[in-house]
Image 1 (cartoon, rainbow, N blue to C red):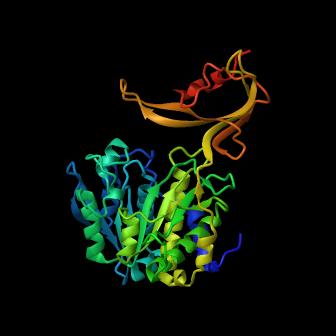
Image 2 (cartoon, one colour):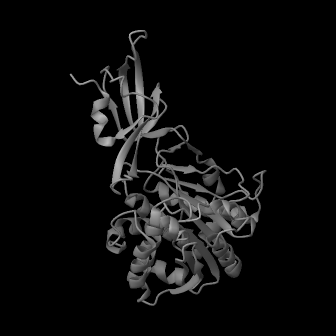
Image 3 (tube, one colour):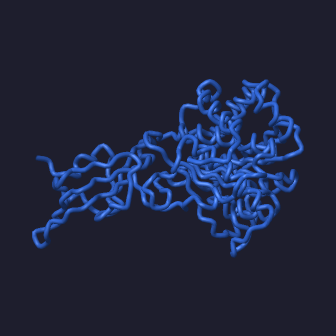
Length: 398
C-alpha cells in the first residue's frame, strides 16, 4: 500500500500501535458504560493537572456536559464523541489519548501537540442516551438532526462551544453499523471517513479541502494496519446534521465512523485504531504535514455499502413444502444484544435477514458451508428472531 506520509509520521503511528497496551485506559472493560463511569476515569486523569475541565451545561436529565482542554497552541482542534449514546468507541479512545499524554509528558508527540495545538474535547455529548445505551436523547431526539433547530440543550452546548472557540479543525466521532463493507470488496469496513459536504452540490471550498487533506492522512495511517478496510461515508448533504453545518460554519471537519472487526464485540481493536489514528493525525496537523496531503487518497476510497451480515450459512437446501421444489440457498443472519424486558439481562438474539444467493455478501463473524445439508423449513423465515445459541437448530438434525 503506497503512502505519502513522512517516514517519521509512519514510525510514530507504528510506535503508538505497538505500545498501546502500555498506555491505554485498562479500567475500561466494556463498551457499555455510563456518564458516571466516564467521570471516574477522567477524574483520575484530571488530578494530573494536564488538562482543564469546563462545564458547558447539562443534558435533558441534568447530567453535566464538560469540555476538556489540553495544550496552549495556536491551532484549535475540537473533538466530540457519543452524540449518539450507543456509539461509545471514540469516547474510549479519547480517554486513551488523555492517558497517553499524561503518561508520556516527554514524548515528541506530547510536546508538539501541547505546543502547537489546543485540543478541545467533549467526550460524551449525550450522557442520557449513554445511560440507556440508545441512540437518541432522553427526550427522544437524534442530536445529529438538531443542528438547525437547536431544540435540545445538548445541541445548543455543541453549537455554543464551536462558536466560542472557532476551532480550525474538528473531529466528529461516531459508530456505524458493523456490517457495512468497503464498496463491493466484501471487506468489512473497520472505519469510515467523511469530509462532509456544505451544500447539496457537494462542492469544495477551502474549509472542506483542508478536511479532505486531514482525512487523507487518517486513511494512510489506518492503511498501515488494516489495508483495504477503510471506506467513505455517504457525502449527501444533510442540512440538519452537525458535521455538515460545522464544516459550513468554517471548521474543517472530519467524520469518523467506527465500524466492525471480527471477534471484537466491545470494539476494543477499533478503539485502538481510533486512538492511534487520531493521535497521529493530530501530530500531522501540528507539524503542518496534513496541509501537504494528497486529497486524491481520500477521493479514491470506496463508499460504504451494506453487503455484510454477522453469519452466513452457504450452500444449504431449503424445502418449504411438498408443493415446491428444494432450492440451494444461502442464509444471512445478524446477531444483536437485546435487553430482556422481564429479567433486565442482555441476551444475544439472532435474526434471519436474507435468504437466497448471497454470494456478494460477506460475514463479520463466520461463514459456514454446509455442502447441501437440509435446513429446517419451520425455522427459516425472513425476520425470524431466536436465541443465538439456537443457531445449530436451523439445520435439520440427523
